[in-house]
Image (cartoon, rainbow, N blue to C red; front, side, top):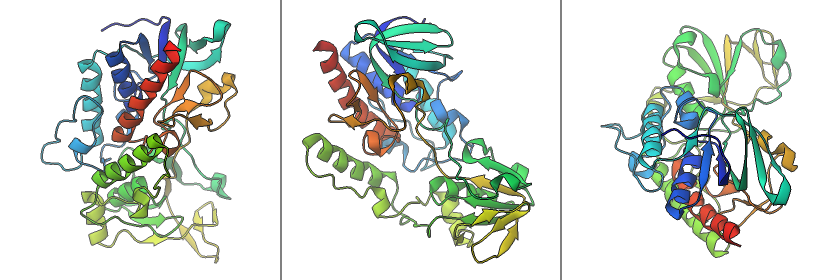
Length: 357
């Protein structure tokens, strides 16, 4: 459907997985809302992921509310393209009012305590705002000494598009999480690789996947909702890296051998604290992200926002502002498909209470 920018009771900033599932619950509740998305097509950040990126769970454990993700054929772990297709169809299935592409530059409070949302396509007012912009647009690269002197290629995981440009090269992959392990596994089939991690990587057992994350996140969500002590731990208590097939295959050929952090980059490569040096052609930084919250600067938000409420998504300083999908600080596992759905449900429940108070 065609949707125009207009005033609404609720404006959701961001049309990826978190924004869509918030929209699902707002639609069910009969709330007047818009979703503003800066992407040219549906799919959120998933449409920019490298082609071989895998979910950590079967499709049935990677679903938003209302409609289970269809199976990915014989593949236990769906790839990024499958997720994009699912989000595209989800948006259409529930006829969600998404305006795109439109980039939100600022959210501020104006007359009567309403929010003004300024975009490159005009402005609109709302009684409440849900920020669901995620982290993909704010990749983090640590300030390693000598980084600017390195003469080879440097890129973050957001710019990685497959192994072809690195055939026959020597490549350092920095980061011990799932992204680092998956990219390292793929690159090691075509290049000589060095894997650098902050601490020794911890691998989950082969038979453990995101279903365990779902169960642990459910317990943490229930604890937060019921006001009891958070059991904590998360999946990190078992390990950090899910053994999706490419990672398992890399392990079986002894490609997942990690080195400790370097002390510096040199013009030709890497230097360790003991003085050892290695020349490399490229460095791939799989070092995480920061929340994309620049559009909230006019509200006085700097860095993370003080959050409260049952879902942990309500700003305690700015009534009517909610943040969904940024990680554990906005709800257990809320940066995952399942976790976003869980926090969105209680967020919309609280939001309706705000609108009717």
